[in-house]
Amino acid sequence: MRATALALGLALLAAAAHGQTFLDAVLAEVEGRLVTASDVALARALGAFELQPSSAPITRSEVDRLVEARLAVAEAERLGIAPTDAEVEEVWQAAIAGAGGPDALARWLEAAGIERAWGPALAAQEARRRRFVALRFRAFVFVPEDEV
Image 1 (cartoon, rainbow, N blue to C red):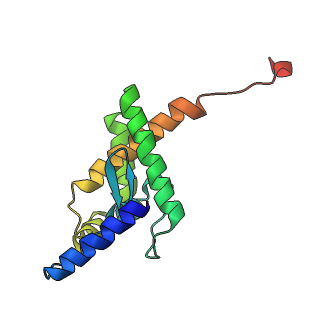
Image 2: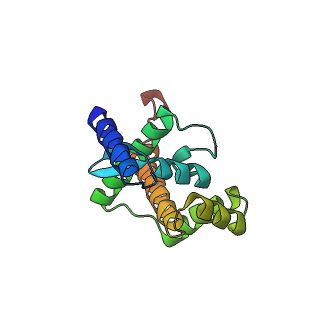
């Protein structure tokens, strides 16, 4: 994490030296993929990965939750666990409703500078994560021997 912070600081200095605007912050790296502040903001806005909409500063626990979700999605992909189209659509529709409807979500995405395509893609990841958790953890039922 320290190397990431140093790289981020150097990138900020280089951008400032060239009169460029800083667009995002790298918060972590998961299996070679960056987790950025905009990733957390989008997950919050859509209520994905058990994050809640918030305008408060990003917390370490939110970053950790997103990292864990990315690891679960990667493991689900390795195992060939995929959600159905209906499950993805259910997550996406819940995200739209949670954001205050399609117009409110579109305005938020535009204001945040996030392409609309990222929303359904994140909904698909959330649906895959949910399917993975259901199959790998919730499907296990432990029955005490005296109840068998």
